[in-house]
Length: 265
Ligand SMILES: Nc1ncnc2c1ncn2[C@@H]1O[C@H](COP(=O)(O)OP(=O)(O)OP(=O)(O)O)[C@@H](O)[C@H]1O
Ligand SMILES: [Mg+2]
Image (tube, rainbow, N blue to C red; front, side, top):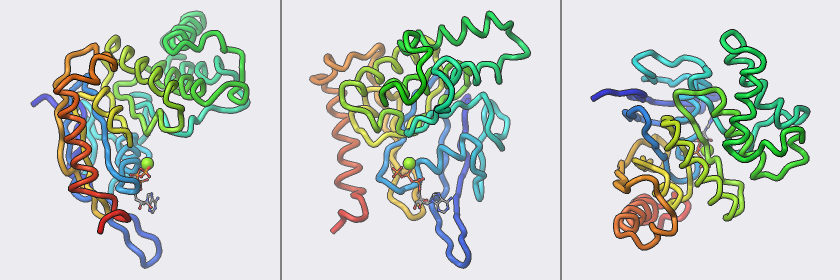
């Protein structure tokens, strides 16, 4: 199998003084180039921890991550992260927030005017070019999130890592941004690893849904293939038997077999 991104036998143990907590145990996952993978699981099971290991922000206690056969040890522009709490720099404009990332990655290889065009192209992709001169404090949460996505895409990452990217948004904005991310994924063929709590979002966007067991020592419980053709349209899918079957399978995993610890009888 041609593994583009391989998560290989990861354990994560946190140690604070005498207290030890085993968060992840033996997590392995092989991802093909261009795949859209969602990770779903109850709060606190270790999803963000896993994403941070892939991002290179955290070193696994055991095991490791390989991207195109090379070990990932630190953050790099080949893996862009979009966090749930949009992490734009508040003192920079929308344009400059994206420009900062573009300059970092392309200063040596693209001219000033090419870099400018590239910033504008990515702001266009998320329909934020009109707000280029605004600061984060002057735009809505959904707009900030779109700028965060533009900034990540502008780095032309091999892998896009999304930690509940739409979690803080209202339903309409969320639907709109999901559609934009689907279009961008279709157009650019990025490999995406996305954490979500939302079952419909996972089914709509993913090629495969990775379902995690509850912690401590959480691991991958099951992986569900979503064999729906692309492009996908949310309105058509509501009554699609494959969509309904996938949705039920995830709900069944989360709420029947692996209920949240506080809810379990
Ligand atoms: N740096 C750390 N030191 C100690 N414990 C940590 C650290 N980071 C995370 N944890 C613990 O690891 C567990 C998993 O945390 P994580 O943030 O990965 O969960 P999550 O699945 O992303 O949850 P949520 O869905 O609420 O975002 C939690 O019990 C958390 O307290
Ligand atoms: Mg998290």
